[in-house]
Image (cartoon, rainbow, N blue to C red; front, side):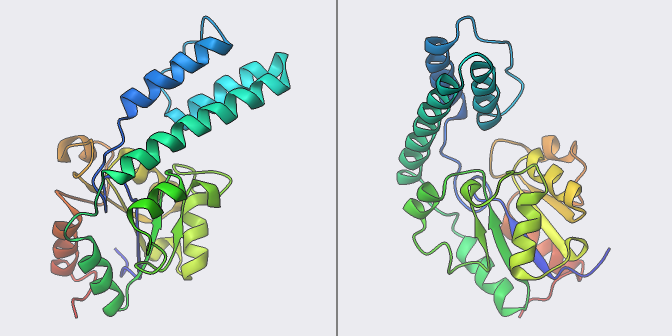
Length: 225
């Protein structure tokens, strides 16, 4: 395994407490969707953002303006819930210390999230200062698990995927790293347990980011200064 030169983190559930109620979000989106298209197509196996895009495309086939209206109203609903959740959230106690320690040891860092930038900045106004790169969903055309999200962050901080560790609390984060060709790690501080994360076959699994950093130091993949 190559020496780690950069660590890119997911945000919600990885560096900050996961406070977004995704089940409630999907419930509200479906209620809105039925006002536009009833019955709704059976498509429950995809995340909320992709579901909105799918339903909007179905509507746009018949009426492009209706598809745009649905998409806009759904995005407004999602952003409202994200910002509200951020107001009740907080960083994990170890987050700032980890990011600072990595910077001092010469490890570059990045943060990528499917969340909206306004919600993240509601919680952490200094988000651009605590990491070498911050990219929300508004900053890329294709959000994770599409590798573009990670590729763009690595372009900003100047590190190759093979020398990067992608860290997140969901199998989607592990998939992102694998598709980009980076090393991967899962942390059980979100919705998934260690056992559930292990099924995605990351290179490392830990209960939280602090434990993960200790593991990497023990393995000699990063240095503690």
